[in-house]
Image 1 (tube, one colour):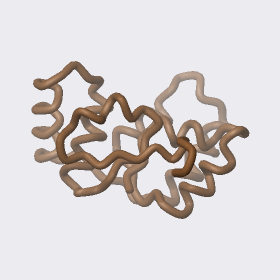
Image 2: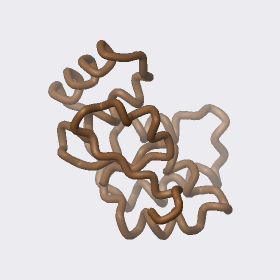
Image 3: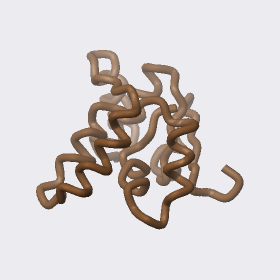
Length: 123
């Protein structure tokens, strides 16, 4: 399962201890764009950086390739969406992985993309 940037950030915050446990058991990958989205904030403190790195270091990174880019372009041609979301969805589709995200509404329209929200009850 590929983890969205929002869940990586949430997992570093104290209220989300169950999410951290979920990540250990179910998350296997993240998109290269998530590294930029999570670590590229100019006001990121050292403790926050270390918490994010602790999560990322336990996941496999999936690089953005030409096929991923073409899928992302096609997605953005269909509907307005951020570059990051398009690349994350495209990475999932190209790698045949489900997406774990807290923002299911941003992705539910994408045909063939399996979405899971571990923050919802019963997930």
